[in-house]
Amino acid sequence: MYQPDSIHSFKHNNERDIVMGFIRTILSLLIVFVIIVFGYWLYATYTTTNASADNIWVNINTYMPEPLRDWSCGEIRGRMGPNAPAPVTC
Image (cartoon, rainbow, N blue to C red; front, top):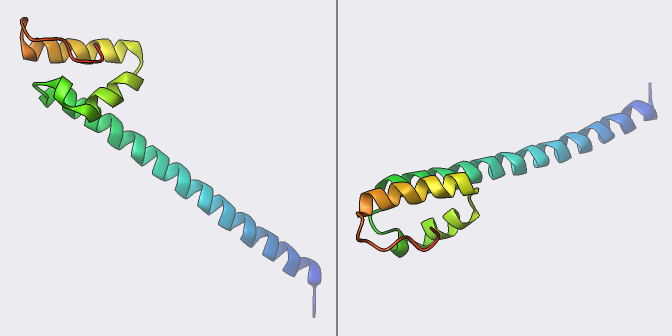
């Protein structure tokens, strides 16, 4: 027995599933990217001795909210010593 309505709705559901799968994939990749960038920034904050030479850290630190930027600058200054120049974004 041929039922065109059920076939049409199956095709519509299949297209919707493909679009939703694509959106989930893009969102997942975006979340992974944010985690990687934040993780690098945090790692660099704890391990960098010369923040001005680390252009990636400087660029990421520029976009951080002010409380996080102040905290990271304090960590870097504490490690570099009182006579060292402040990192570029601080």
